[in-house]
Image 1 (tube, helix red, strand yellow):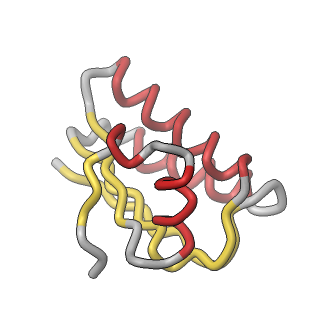
Image 2 (cartoon, rainbow, N blue to C red; image 1 turned 30 degrees about the horizontal axis):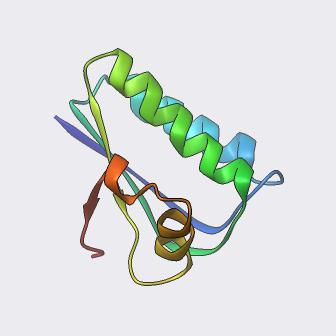
Length: 94
């Protein structure tokens, strides 16, 4: 089973709780693959990156995977600059 969470706008300290809740709601179903769509983000800071890394760590501990949809914009540039693209399966944007 696959679950998908689409995050748009900004992913930072001010949106952290809502984004965390969306991820945890999706994780409750214990999907084999959790797809996190970040292609629609216009801003992401270290809080947002840490949120995605924490979700990935939880998935790995449970024997599941997290994949990212990054598009060609900001999210891809941020994850690339941090050297994180190899950590995730990166899917094409829709």
